[in-house]
Length: 305
Image (cartoon, rainbow, N blue to C red):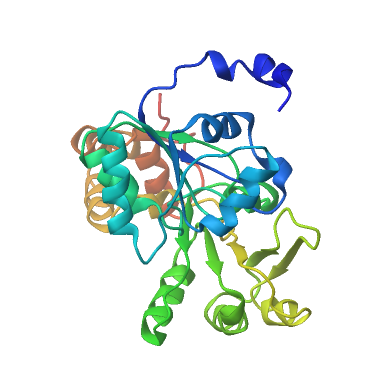
């Protein structure tokens, strides 16, 4: 690594306290690794890796030689204890997964919790993440984004998951393995509004990267265009909603009380009394009352200051 890059970034001058460093590594394109990640990996006392056979070539590419210990899904509890032993000696341990950011639908969360519960510092070294990579190009409608990760394997659990997804107006991100992608596409097409937008991505940052914008109804056809290859990331777009009517923002009980007040008071006065009692904005209550009376605006007859 050129010394000039270290100097330009200032990474070598930053604090490097003992603790667990959660390091994001490239999804596929080795050039996506950050300078800070390389510096931490080069200077850590040891590296806990999901698969040492995957991490070793990445380290060799950048001339990094550090002790490796395995921390995969099947030994994570044991690996956490080994990491704690290193941390107890005042060491700096780097945690990596095969690709992307550890502990996001990848091993790592058990190790992170163990270190945090034991009182050691846990420091994020951000970088590549398939979730944020696809969201950045999805153009999803603004609003809540729900992270699902890999859907369950059991049929009933999957059915409940899709029903919840269909009822949620926000966007959602999910991962899927290649051998289940055809099934998932068919189930989503059956569960969602057929016109709901979907962004389908696979082989992110690699030579055959594919990012397709389609709809839930067309998803099975898009998946069938190519043989399943690599993990998939899907963004289910948020539902487009028209602006809510004022009366839809007020619960039924408050609305009945507001209308009762309006039977004895001018609309503006009824709205003011209801606002004082409920804490809701007076203008919202007033507009809701006007809408319930079948008028868009009766301000000329009953102005609100």
